[in-house]
Image (cartoon, one colour):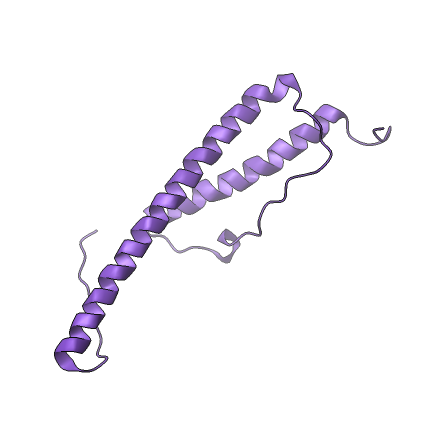
Amino acid sequence: MPDPGGPSFTESWEAALADLEVEVDAAEELLARLHRHAELPAAALRRPWTPPSGLGPLPLPLADRARALADRQARAADALGRALVLNRRQARAVDSLVDARRARTGGDGAVYLDVAL
């Protein structure tokens, strides 16, 4: 039984969607900063989002908002996945340069990679 002094069923769902929108906004901002090669603030490392419990079924008037949010989440997750793959490829490329230098010189000298952005 809902608390008579607490938020309504719909208000609880609206708050949950708003919280999730903040998380998706943060993921999209992180992606934008990565794309611009900008410095990442410490706040970019957020704690995992925890879904609220006991909300019950989504109210029909919020279905379009929830669908749009799910689409944004899917796009952000896809973009983050692609960014991780690119990061791994770049790390492997740098590692291969370091390995080649070690093989050639027998040491751990500095390796520089000139990249046009």
